[in-house]
Each structure stands twice: as C-alpha cells, then as structure tokens.
Image 1 (spheres, protein in one colour):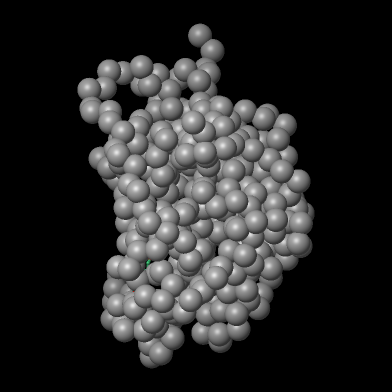
Image 2 (cartoon, rainbow, N blue to C red; image 1 turned 30 degrees about the vertical axis):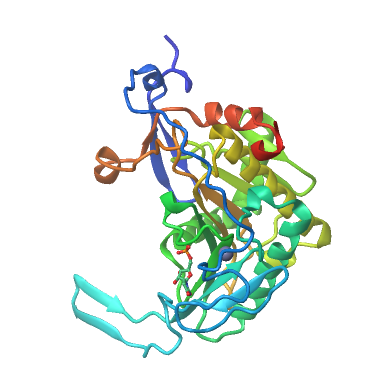
Length: 348
Ligand code: H2U
Ligand code: ZN
C-alpha cells in the first residue's frame, strides 16, 4: 500500500511559522450524532439606533459618530495598548521576564450600513475600505513608538465580534507580535538563501498543482494553504512580491476588493449563513530595517466545520500536542471552488 495524502494520517509542515498540523483524512467517515440545524437568518435594519458604530450614534465613551458616507475610523475607546506606557523591564530571575509594550488601537467601520458584510458589499463598496486600510497603515507608521501595524477583523458572534455592524480593528505594537515574528524569521531566511520571496515560490507551486486554488484574478490568488489548520482556512496571496499594502497600485487595490468579496461570498454560501471568521493582513513592519523578504498576504481563519452552528474546537490533543484536522485542505478547496460567486441572499 502506497502512502497517500487523501487516505492516510500524516503531518504537514507550515513553512511560514514552522509548525505542524496532523491530518486524519480516514476519519471523515466516522459517525457523528451532533445536531445539524440552520439558525434563522437575523433580519437587520440599515440603521440601528442602539449600535455604537452606526452614523450619528453615541459610543461607549460618550463621543458621537459623524454622519459618515463610506468608511469611518476612530481610536478604540478600550485599547489593549497605550502610547503613553512608560518604557521598562522586569527581569528579577532568568525565568521571569517582562517588558513594557507601547502601542495604540483603532476601529475601522467599513460602511454606514448596519446590515451589510464584506460578502454583501460589491467590490466598488469594498475599494474604499482597502484605501482606508492603506491610509491607516501609512498614518500609524508615522507614530514613533509603533513598530508593527496589525489590521484584522473578527466577524460574527462565534468569533467574539462585539457588533454585527461591518467593522474591523487595527492594533499597533512596539515589537512584532508572535505570529508575525515567526513569519519574519522564516521569510527572511528563505529570501536570503533563495533570492526570492518564500510566498512567491509557494504560490508558483500551488498554481502548478492547482488543487488547493479557490479563486484567482489578475493580482491575487485565494487558496487553502497546504498546512491549513481550520477546516475552511484560506490565504490571499498577491501575485506580485510587495512588502506592504501601500505598494499596491490602483488595479491591485480593485483586485483585492474583488478577491475579498469573492472569498467571503463563497464562505457564506457553504452553509447559507453569514460565515464567521477572523481575518487579517500580514506585511512588513513599519520601523526602518531590511524587510525585503516580506510578502504581503491575508489569512482567513473561520471556525465552522459541519454546519452553520457546528464549529471546530482546538482542544484536547490540539492544545496539548498538535492541531489536527479531518477533511483535507484539498477537499475544503474543492468545496469552496464549488460555491457560487453570487451571494445566497441574491439567489432565489
Ligand atoms: P470587535 O467587534 O472585534 O470586538 O471590535 C469592536 C471594538 O470596538 C472593540 O475593540 C471597540 C471595542 O473596544 N469599541 C469602542 O472603541 N467604542 C465603543 O463605543 C464600543 C466598542
Ligand atoms: Zn450599526
């Protein structure tokens, strides 16, 4: 019997973080007696007087939002990081280490419409959101204490989003956050050895194999990474090796809006539900330095597994050993490829 990725338990390597995932394809046939249900779709109004992100409404700190027309950015009223934290270290013993960390946080509203999501916005409506992310990245980079700008979005109550109003966050820190630091080391080493970006070579390999590709346009490719942990995890890779969002030209910004719409529509269509996820962009740090090895990319980490309500948990063996998945990344990609590019709410 020959070893096959689609039949036999195996481990896959993530060259970005140098972590492993256990894949158990033979388990997808196992009986499962959990409940499968489709929750009722909530009917949301265009404007919610109780939403702290809707135009004209009061936020928790007593400030009033303007009557914004496209995007709106404000300083997070409850930031996890503060620019005014005094620098300092705590290191009384080799095993006890801490240091102060400065930074700031902002909230980005994608649209004045309370009832929309990226999946329900068209590419022309997402384009101003892309421009806002680029402006914010450049603007935050000018703050002296800030070394890294992390753009992300928590979508849906299952991922802890505090409001259905379409919005994301930006957290800025002095040092590289953990995941970014891991990706920095591997991309730097690969670039130094091979003279090309790790993700350029990875993208070429994926385009050649084809089976994990979900969608592609002129500037971006959406795929399920070979080493995906979450059932329907995807990445958006830029065809061009650019280190940061600000380097995207006009056509690339339109293409990114198109790719974001396309992948979120496919997600919603799988279980005909507003698909929860955490997503975000990884790009070069904003402090001066040699960052030529960085290749901009997006990660989508959606928790749903089997239905609109049955999610994957990273528990047990995964907390104590290694993350594990049953359906293969190739099966997940095929499922995503099969989805309509039109949102289910627009289909009869
Ligand atoms: P999440 O939905 O991903 O939690 O993002 C919403 C953020 O909005 C959250 O970080 C902030 C919360 O601190 N927020 C304000 O800054 N002002 C408010 O009036 C409510 C929420
Ligand atoms: Zn709202």
